[in-house]
Amino acid sequence: MGKVEKRLLDAIARNGAVHLTLVDPAKQSPKIASEIVSGAAAAGSDGIMVGGSTRAAGELLDDTILEIKKAIDLPVILFPASEAGVSRHADAIFFMSMLNSRDLYFITGAQRRGAPLVKRFGLETLPMAYLLIEPGGAAGRVGKADLIPRTKPELAVAYALAAQYMGMRFVYLEAGSGAQQPVPVGMVKAVRKATQTTLIVGGGIRTPKVAKERVRAGAEIIVTGTLVEQAKDRVAKIREMVKAIKSARGA
Ligand code: 1GP
Image (cartoon, rainbow, N blue to C red):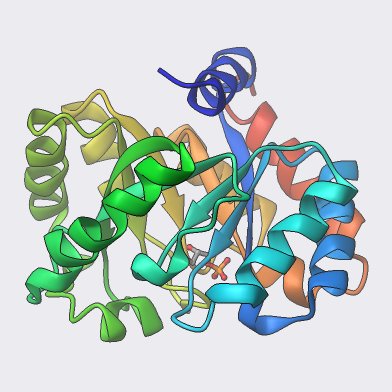
């Protein structure tokens, strides 16, 4: 296990759950991205995920990561939409497969193309199953996902078990960025109960209450993107979110 994974697991062991801040390089300049993550770090977020859009690539991706790393010392984990989302400047990469895509490219194609680069850059890999739940948002559309219905937790469980049996250590239940409805609590609970992987939940989580319910149901990593992009009083908003996530298990 690499350093970043160990740091995440240690933080989960200490606090019950952690918060990751998602930054999409296509949505703001590298300078603004560094301001966003400085706020997130001050508020107690545990790491930064970079990616989430097909335009998050090349120089813009590299420059965003370099600015982020200048500003803070939280781990920076790539969250690539394709092989173009690999950067030598990150600390680690969610080496992910969208198991419920209808397109082989998102299951093994991008991975085959990206793997030699990951090796060349010496990036730490965090093997992750990326499961798209209704409504799925842009990630679901772009990734041609056969969306898991909100009413079918058993289907999410089946995919998550398959991921575990294939050796993936992380499962991400994704409702899509900006989703009106986050992943249902019952689905989080069912996946938690049936599997031992580290469980990530994201998409449409905007309030501490919604985050807390999902941590109590078994999520160990909560991802928010939109919240940090939009918030005027960003640090206060993330601080409330982080507090809810880290106190959820004890309370
Ligand atoms: C998207 O789950 C993440 O990949 C974050 O979603 O932007 O809705 O927080 P939000």
